[in-house]
Length: 218
Image (tube, rainbow, N blue to C red; front, side, top):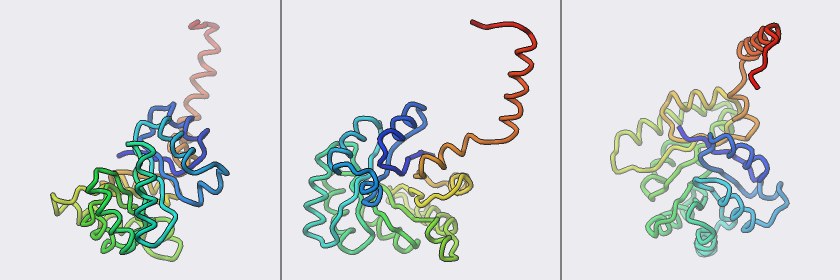
């Protein structure tokens, strides 16, 4: 499974990239607005830091403007995955720019039916939003199971399932068990994967016992 971080905070991205565990980055208009940075410059900087796909989203909803934006975003770097919404216009853009060799992340997916359309349009990634489905009383991880099963039935489908709107570490574990290719999560959630009380307890005991020896490795 690949780990993407869902942020536009360059400091967070650098910190996670230094661990060697980060495979990519996803951004969206809300995250860009929160950063206070200029969109094109920030995406270019992220691409310089991360050795993997960097999702950067179009801002328009009509086909012609969306296509023009997609072409401009794609020129930033070969690492860019242009992010388009799962709408008829978005999938038309996906079909065109994916055929040109640009990675495409089709976002705002909320059903297996929509995921089929994204794969048919040639998306590199489809982003089902599990947390937002959970918020309205639906089974977010259930659609991940369905999408993975459907994609596995067809060798022609090359689209990777990118689980988005991750709220906690168990979303990540469940996605991995279901065979999802990628998860994207806030840095805070990715860091929670390290945590376990027995790890902390064991390390504290080892440190205390080592001090009793009076030794130093250095």
